[in-house]
Length: 321
Image (cartoon, rainbow, N blue to C red; front, side):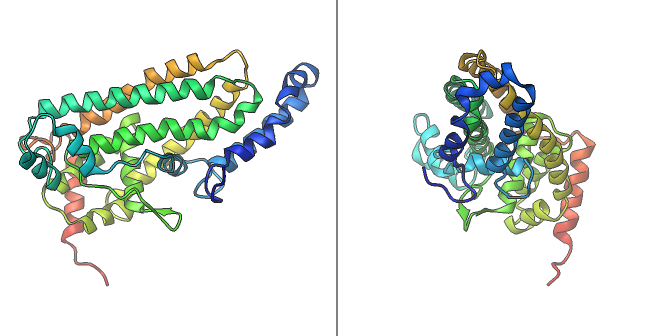
């Protein structure tokens, strides 16, 4: 399986570590220092495989890049809305929803919530089955599948994220890769969404403020500025820093769990099944209560109001050329 230098060369990792997989048990029983050497080698290999932005660390950008490079993860907004709405609505309403948003097309929020629940359940079933399959072998040779495991789990979480964004009024986000790079505003939007899913401080308020700005017709260029160097950017950095610590701990905890042969795929799959839905439900709860998805939305929290006012100030300031 050929990959670019930033891709996941699972086959190469498998060749590197599969050779001593059969000797792992003897190493565990015979010499603890040899086990430590194997673990160190495995850590280095995992960092190298996961570090997609090549900054020497495991961070949330790496996880998003791994996810988006997984086949089938990128969602086309028009195709998705067409598929979800055609059973119950005439084409003119669907066209309105695609051109603007489901809320603009007067599709009831209750109906959107129902579709969102179906989306979450579908993606949950998909990722849980894959997690079980990837977790089945056990042993030190599993180091070769850890990047694939991560890519699949967060890839399906990104699938659910895109679908939920589109159901609740967000425009198409550009998930295409150009010259081995993804758009920075798109990347930061997904960081905010994942932060909301995991309850990272500030992410929920930032997402609501972004929805408010879009509902008020803010230009895409101005929203991108807010995401990459303006009002929302410090929140992105804060969420990314929180995720960096979480990702590193999660990746290596996953390795040592998989290094124990008795831990099988059924356990991994059930854990994934339990953790996936609560994260998606948190994102859904935020998206269904914004000015973009609900015209009667009332901003009750002070933090979101502060971000909205700051974004408006950024938009009112003349652009420096």
